Image 1 (cartoon, rainbow, N blue to C red):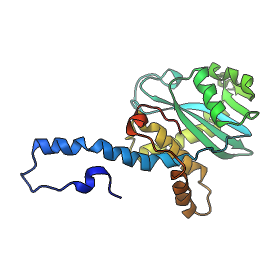
Image 2: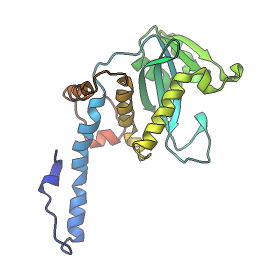
Image 3: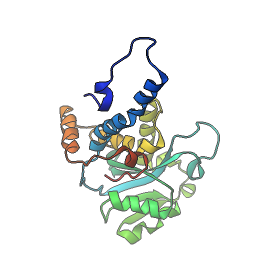
Image 4: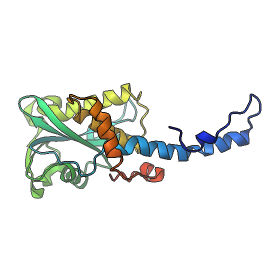
Length: 233
């Protein structure tokens, strides 16, 4: 597949390239990036996909930023906030996952995310953060665990979301070498969600088929809308 003006690019012999031609060449890249990004990112989310249901763990994790120093947890700075929801099946099996980048950990952001991805009437398992307090008002059975009272570390009290967070960060650092900017993070989350939810697929060839099937069902997005954070799919 040849993108944008790349098909019309003719390499110059050594010494002939000028600063003007170089600027023209790089000036053409956004159009190519636009098309490439639409092709690469849009199909990961299937329009009208089913909501999570049953027992669902919900928590946040933090991606990017400096590796050392600074605050940790909900007081962190210069990191992207990613909220995770994962179905928990007994005894130790996880179902489907949903992830989304959010601007803050307020009740508006957290409850809105849960309402968008989890079926009403489901049991939502969270820690004691006040941002989740209104879940019961939106038709959910809210079961919260105050970690300071249990004596258990977070990954023991809520193993599902912490396992997903760990795998996500390992994937970003390994596969993508950590070179993921915040403005494109939503689409990497969609890709990881697609892969994780089909991890037990018995036919690997069907993954490509589903990806192409979803591609023709998804409206493409212009580059400016992608980087402006208007991630509505």
